[in-house]
Image (cartoon, rainbow, N blue to C red; front, top):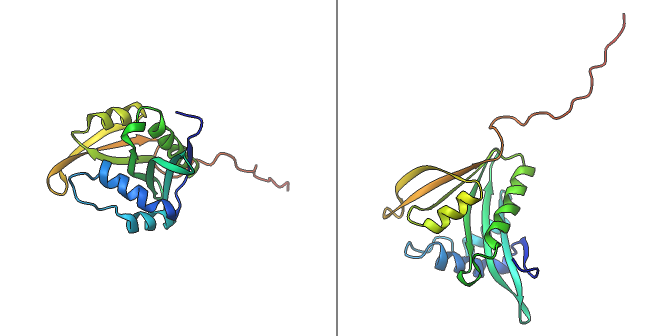
Length: 174
């Protein structure tokens, strides 16, 4: 990864570029579900984190990758992640996932879930290397035409967060 790479929260101005990357590198052949208005809503949504990985290019910053994750009470769902093909294998995807995992840990999330095209061997290897495990194959998940592989990364045991410290009980003398 280059030192000029910046990972930041996506802004409304990033929605179009993120949507185009999703269309071209995630949703290719499936129809365009994550268009610019939907990405803009995700950026504004209080339970979503949308990240942009950018590098300086000329007089502007160029989008190299992005990720979107929805946070629930105990589970997070990594909805989208893509890196421009010319910039893959430079640690950008790993840096995006690391940022999201750290956020999930801070939020007390127990597990991160995701789906990927079952035939996408490169993505499967990538997520395995980041600690994700395969859970189930879902036939016809993508538009009734293509199977999805669901994966999970456990961050902690499910259930209430353990209380780290409690004040000592004050005893009273009779």
